[in-house]
Image (cartoon, rainbow, N blue to C red; front, side, top):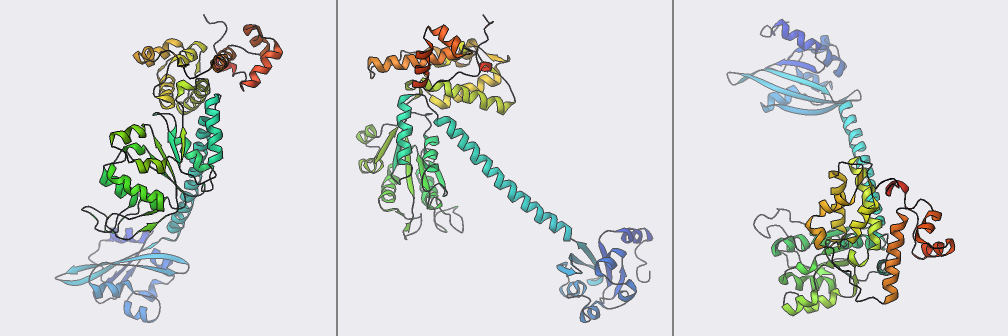
Length: 471
């Protein structure tokens, strides 16, 4: 090929079979070579193109914008997107210099129509997948909350009943309870059953950040508010929660310097971002939670009294697990199913192991029970978890946690009912029918039916109880 003697025949063969279009022009912009792929993409014959100036082809409308002309003019690589015959082409021109003059222009054309379609389809599929992922996560959260809100204890039934009454309102709620009692779960439950359920639920742990970082996280900051601040500023979590619910976890850990600003937010629903002088207004519901005694903190001078009274509009105490031992059965069953599914196991738990778990005082509450159940599912090598496994996993903590039950705040009838519920729940675990249960407890069928109804109990799945033939 005339003018291309500097390119070997082998390279020409590569050009000829290339899927990409290849065009070569000389330093004047005259087309000296076009491969078959480019003829197909351009929808022209090489006899019409080769030997002609790219500027002439541009004038004739063959090219809307000639990459060759643009490359010669700008003396640097140029890329353009062009549409031809329903195809979307990415065209790149690369100048090849000799003695500071452009000797050749190499043009590469690639059809990205299908690529872009695949990209769009991929983005659509990704968006759909993200949507379903969010929905699945939402369903999982709801299932977890549903399971963790189930209760067989009277004290917890009263708490859930109270939450159901206050959830649809905008009243400020202060959740009080020991670590691990499920304050986060209950806060989310309140939001999910409120009129703001379709708006954001935003949580911030007041005990994990320094005062400066906590303020910027809560209220956001303006451009250049401090060294290292984003050039565009940042929206705070208070503003993110606008229209929804702001959950302030571990409110007792909030630094004193920020408490006055939080007080203003609660009173007037206004705040000022760090580095700004302009107030912003938000429409939010606030739920706070603490595992500390705020009244003691007031006496110690570490918590503002005026903030406490603003927060203490609707205090809700979440009782520790040792005060609602009936619920331990529900949680054991829930966590057995959850962690068996998570790790692909089919393990069961023997009745005497359940008894050991019920004897323990659970200072870490539901969170500690969850951790222990996960550990038992993973580390016990047998199909059935036994009492010795529970004692091994809990170790010294088991012996320390076997303290006397505190009945000092209960009447005789209340204590008897708690024991009766506990006793029947355990007997259900080793009975396969109501007839067998009646025989083992010595109760008549009618009395047994009445008591099961009273305590909302039912026969457990036989597969999860201790086999009869075991010693």
